[in-house]
Length: 585
View 1: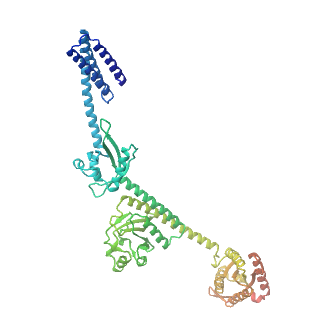
View 2: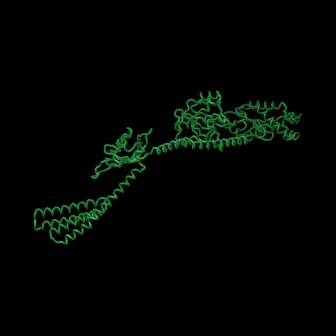
View 3: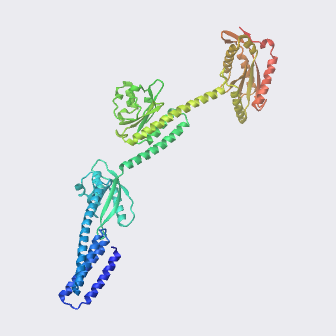
């Protein structure tokens, strides 16, 4: 029954009882005492029913008490009035109320035991550790998980205080949390290290709740904790991996923007060692064309001492493994020939290495390189699973990087080749017409900026067509190669000799005025003084040359070419027909 109804019934019954008592005709002490006793019984029963009705009890208990109090009330009425039917009602209420109270009480006790059993099972099987502490922080009760995590049995834990498991910093955190809890503040879970019976502490996430007695006064602290050591280790590893991946991405970007040469390898190793957990030194072993692995870069080792050393695949300590491996046994290295062993001990600090993390770098399914990270301080430096995962990811990233580097370098070589071919005469190997114009325009801009002169010589072979017609085009091509080779010998390093096409050649003479150009022209004619030996034949021929000087004869390459071409044909017209003819022996 509801609390309000019980209060109303109590009030009504008290009024009725009072009226009956004050209307009595007899006030004998014994009779008065009996009346008062029954009134007390009625009052106590109703108050008990009211109080019990507000607790988590079976509703039959307060109902049974109310029925019993009514039975007493009617029994009191029968005693005061002498009417037998009041006694009949009293007995009926007693017969109904007592079984209800008894049955409800038995049901409640059984239900209470069941709940206690379930609660105990939950506590015992909880995945979180639970400690019940008194206000002095003594451990009153530990559940099974708490015993397992802390490494003590229940009896041992009950003899300890929570402070026995806390470091100085952890105890400070606990006291601050306890103070905040009893101050009524909202308390979030906090982390501390708990000292266990094992070799290393655990990182625990702790929650605190105040335990209260029947008067709602604090009498205990319920401490719940869970082991988050592994989670924090994973989080820490992820942070390290993210940091390392960031460094790796930066390195990849830098490498792709430059040639991956020896210095790039050294820089790469330095960055990796500084960012990789517990690594002190590193080395790159690259498989070269001789199918042997060579040191191409090292960090914290003497590279010059190690550079001459190479290994056949079967000589490697990794045994040509294509998996990430941790090496702690270096006996294989001591079986090498004395010269290599001496260098490795001196330059590779073999006697100091405690552990090696060897990462294979594969391209197209074949190991092309080993990236070795060495610890000089601990044999267990790389034993964590997270480090192995980082290493495997790193190996894949480097494999992709090297593949891209090889691809980019090959494309670069192809572009350079195509660029060179586009600027090179395919027959003579001299710069071609395009290269001439490109170089000439740059040289004019430079001469203009420096206030200098420059000159060009335009050369045309005399009677080259006659040689072609007589001995064939193959012979003519061979002759052009021989002429080009001789012309390059009379030039300065700063000069450019180019083939314009056919039997025409051109010279660019930087920082050269008219007098210097005339001297250069004389050298060209001298170069044709001796016959050219081609395919067992000797050919004597001459050349007509025209010159133009910047800025005297023009301020653009087109203007200079026109002048030089005109001068060349003027010189050709001056030569006699006899001098124009080629002589073939």
